[in-house]
Image (cartoon, rainbow, N blue to C red; front, side, top):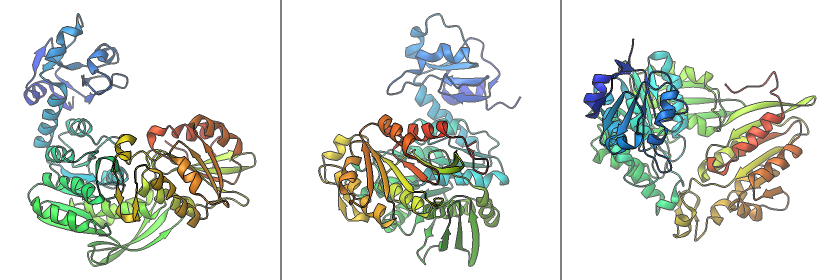
Length: 498
């Protein structure tokens, strides 16, 4: 049996105490009692809202081979009879296990952060490197204080390439995570107005993102967006952290991985990239210039991790957008069809503008409309109160948020008008500011509740339309996407999500 971890290695790595008859080993690690697989270990982590110890019995019923629990919680488990490893603190034990996984691994490790594009770049790297070896990458956006050590602890010893996404909401959060991951290559995709409620400026955001360089191994590489206004700050931070090799990507002529030319299409795009004195023509199976920029960052990281540049670039032709991140659906409506673009996973000013450009480039059928369904942008900060309490400079757009986020949402009016989008349907209190900023020639619908806009959209979409839904995940606008999918079958010529 190929164990992810033997029980003896678990005990040693976590400094745990065995209770009961432990299995020889485990096949995986889970912190979710609902989805745990047979033979996996359940780590009873205490979160902000729930305590995993309360779900230990469910985890066992669903196939858990053993439980990792806190010494302090052991009495509360009562008469539960199960193999257990008892530790001082479950999250700290998982961190120790993650560090042990990194210590035993000979894989090339890539870490990715950035205000926008880090998950897409991570998924591109997973896709590009998979034909070249065994790839282990973060699931979804497991990029925080529990997601990173969990991803590390799940990394098989036989991994050839490890790809980790590292995120943050506050300064100082990336530092301990990158020191766990110890990447050979660290990428900063972009610096943009995200999580502004916790930072005074984009330079402060860049400084927090630059913490990723502090974990880079000796002789490792930093990959920086040369088109970013903060590139010098990032370059200096990489040098201060002792990174041996600093590389740039972007359209700037001084970029080592250069975006020489871009041709966008409704379903895909072509990138001409200058790499190592050559110009590569690269087909990408997803539309949008922002996707091409992410692809360039991924090509740089994969190349610096030792992968063949031509092979990883060629693989991008089969790259497809993910659910909530640009996935397209072609849905039947009578004798015609509509196109639905799902961008409902997240939204900040930079990603919202990229999505508007994506809709601009989409082609409706004759008589169809380009319809933007937009929800509040909440990635600017964890709590609106924190945002409202300070004045924030958005350097790239020469905006100030002021006491409210009104200006940031209202500022979307200009790119919408420039893109020629004539139908805009909005939901949420913050999007009311955009409603008021749009000119009269734009047809605007606003509903406070997602449920009300969902009902409106179901009755108002028509054959030929291209509909894009873009919002922060927590607004619930994904329900609009699901309602449209439930109401209209996929067209045979269209793409269906896996």
